[in-house]
Image (tube, rainbow, N blue to C red; front, side):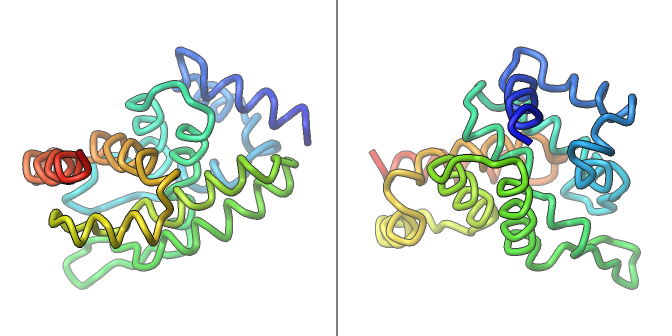
Length: 187
């Protein structure tokens, strides 16, 4: 488990984290991270997305700086979508409560791969709150910082930004403006 963890971290913080697709194509992830294989088979038929869950995850990781905590959080942030996918009458997929499912699945994976407690604490919080709606007012931002944690909040904004960049262009300008306003409010 420790060796798998070490090699996985090396891969995702490398200059080419998209090489995780090579491990998927070679059926390596089927053994070391079978949950990723399920993500690759989970479509996201939703106007906010243009990739399946696994492809979106890889894209999000690539939009993020090579930091172990951030990239692990992005690797696992949507892993709960494999359990939460529902399709409405218009054939649009929804993933209600996927963040809490992602949290539980991530917790199991991180224990299985024997991650240290500090890394688990940061990654699990980021996974849990990655989809939280943050208002732009000072009171809303303070409330979110209090809920998430002052030490984790700046990382959460980076995760949210990478996640947004890996989505479709739908409402991209609006989403970017909201993130800019939250950062402005923090300053």
